[in-house]
Length: 207
Image (tube, rainbow, N blue to C red; front, side, top):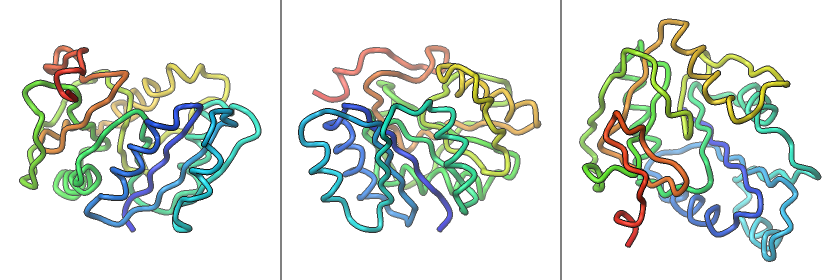
């Protein structure tokens, strides 16, 4: 397999169910690890017990800092590409395969994002379309990157800034980013940066 995906849940079960359902509809093979951060939400235990055996599930006894989870996951994964996926997203069936296509087409691209919550990109297509980003930008959520480009996050770094740290290290290594346009996503708490055409309002995409 070419790509490994990490999803973290904390008392957010309905979002996680939708995210996992979308992942199960992907058009390529991948490794999936789900970590629950000791959720107390009703039905969580039963849901995770029902998951297929090929999904790696880990239940933490406490809320482990996200930095630590990211570092652990990248180290233990044996695939060339890594996806750190938020659980509050809806993704197209070619979310992962389109990212792999970009990496295979563009050897200088170290990471990709999918355009999200953008009124101009609401339909997915199998025809690959993307835009190279030459200069640093901020959209730290849901990155997919080459494992070789990842720099371990300092344990003491506040997790809120962890994604910015990952991106800054990728850019400092002379790697480029890319926005994938043909496989848009919905992120219920975030959106594509405004300068790239993003919009904070989600309701127009999901109603």
